[in-house]
Length: 120
Image (cartoon, rainbow, N blue to C red; front, top):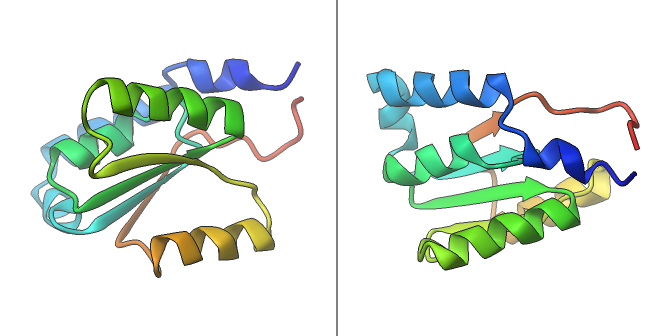
């Protein structure tokens, strides 16, 4: 198994993080107009909430198979102008490549229920 199953679940932490973003004026101010990065996005609920709250750019990352499906969803829903899904390798080289793609450090980083141990 390649672990793609984990990207197809709506994890509890993503719901809690999304509720916090929607209910907190402080977090809404941090997100609005800034760049947002979601690590291990899966279904990308928090990243999509950041988009809905008016971030200038939301970058949603996951393994290649999951990122591809998320990008398809962004395209189909017409929101790929300020949202993109990219594959991300959890190592120093992957982090440097991602920072280069982003053009610097994002204003907000969201990571919910990320799995660091090799499951697959």
